[in-house]
Amino acid sequence: QVQLVESGGGLVQPGGSLTLSCAASRRIVGITVMEWNRQAPGKQREFVAGVASDSRTNYADSVKGRFTISRDIAKNTVYLQMNSLKPEDTAAYYCHVQGVDGRGRSFDAWGQGTQVTVSS
Image (cartoon, rainbow, N blue to C red):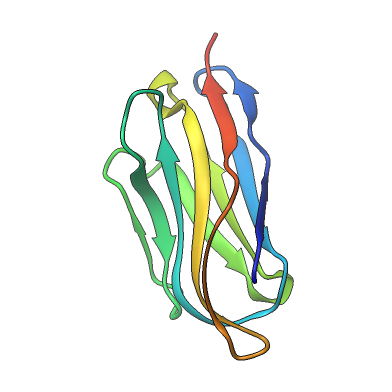
C-alpha cells in the first residue's frame, strides 16, 4: 500500500510563505488524482490545488495567484508552494494521490496532514 508522508507545515506570519511536501513510499507510474486539500477547525475539508497527469493545474479561487502546486516525478513527490499567506489559510493540509504504483497496483492514499498556522 502506498503511503504519503507530508512535511513543511508550521507557524508563519501573515504575508509569509511555506512550502509543503508530500512524498510517496513507492514509485508512482500513473496518476488519476494528485491534489492538496485542507480542513480548518469546525469546517469541512476543501480542495486547494490539483495537478493532472498532463501537468495541467487547477486551484480553488481562494488561493489562485498565491499557491502553486508542482510535482517531481523522479522523487514521487508533490509540493505546494504557499505565498502571501493569510490567517484564513490556517488549516491542516492533506495531500491525496490516486493512481497506479510501480507494481501495477491501483491505490488511493491520503497523507496524515500537516498543520499550517498563519498568525502574528
